[in-house]
Length: 308
Picture 1 (cartoon, rainbow, N blue to C red):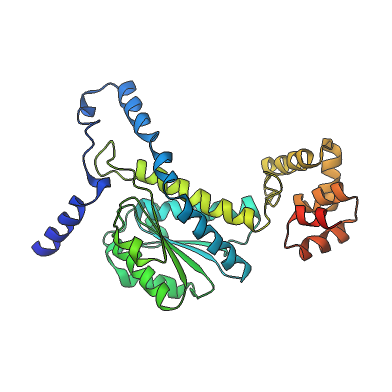
Picture 2 (picture 1 turned 120 degrees about the vertical axis):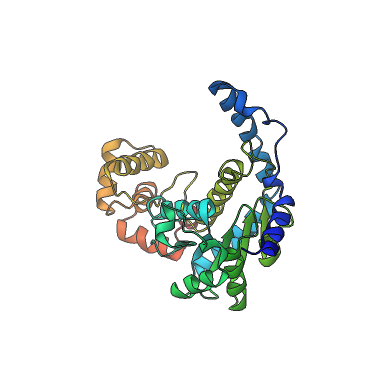
């Protein structure tokens, strides 16, 4: 790094609220364990309020995700370090929760898979690396790209956003700093400005929590709007282990007020498809008919019931 590059970066950090020192934790190294965790907890309680300030933007991005899914496109997350890992965490939870293919929500991290477990030096500083990664997965105009960076200035994310926009892909960005470069580099900017961390510059804390809340809302909202939920039940879960099989039985029971044996029988008849089992029990129609009706109504149980 040259002196000029260092000075430019120092200036950028000086302008980020997430890098400022919190006056509420200047004495944290003098505190007992319980006093430290109370101080951290007090700071954490401000995170949800910060996220509340960007809900309109979150909802707008979620609607674009719904549109992408309907067109056969994907949600692609792009980030470095903690931000990249949070994208991966959200992506890998979608298949078991909503029975979508693993290719529908994809997460890329600067430095590749190895960076999930150990930092890859310099990877986040290379904007071209993001272009290479996005080309490797065949990013297209049908997809939506969401760049994640607490600082809002990560070159890897900026490079990916620029490439995505150049091919006509809808883009969004999540940052915890106002006026962050990635916010203006995307079609929609989501800024959850959480302010200084209890431990100065440790943006895995409040900033990480804020990003996780936003990512939870994006995929959950998009999946609800795509017919993956009935009432408040995740009826499209993939029962891949004993706990999820039991959860599927319970979901069928909750949705239909039936007993456990009836739920189990309906699930087995429906090939362990909770949504299909629920509609079968609620409508009294055959599994084959319910399957056909769900396909016609894009997977929405309520729409099928209302059409009867």
